[in-house]
Length: 141
Image (cartoon, rainbow, N blue to C red):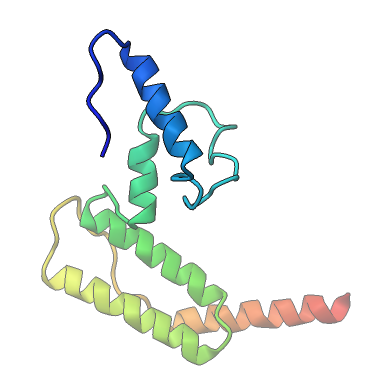
């Protein structure tokens, strides 16, 4: 534990000495990211950087639940387009449809959801068409 600041010593000098002595004892040697550049130094200053960083690390959202579900549905469709198999496409659509149906039965607070469950056959059809196009392009090159 650190000592109390002695009277007559400026606070800055006392803090600097505490830091220097701790560094000399090697107390900072095993910190994560030691020797690495600080993240975001090349970006403009943002007063809320620590809040945004915490929210990103903790996967938190400040959006109302309905908007979060809309974003999740959008991400699910993108994931379905990039899926490796039809089974995976159907699983992704089924998972997001379950969440949409639950939100329609028990509307969460916030703006209206504005979504209905996706037509799995239509999503699979789009996935097949995208797959055919990728194969055609690969064979053409």
